[in-house]
Length: 81
Image (tube, rainbow, N blue to C red; front, side, top):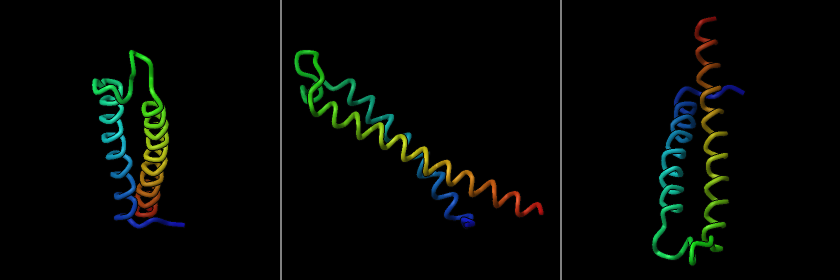
């Protein structure tokens, strides 16, 4: 299967955007002072659920970005041939 150039760029940019958003979220989660993520210094259920969500989102964003990057590389190779 061959991806179009716009779709490949979209997937790559989605992967980059995902990393930006989830790094910011993870930073805020670890620095939480509201008492939701930590109770007396111990992680809460809220923390664990959101940590898992963050890890899954990092993995998904990375996979989607890699698909976009591979699509762009394949298009570049086919343009040279």
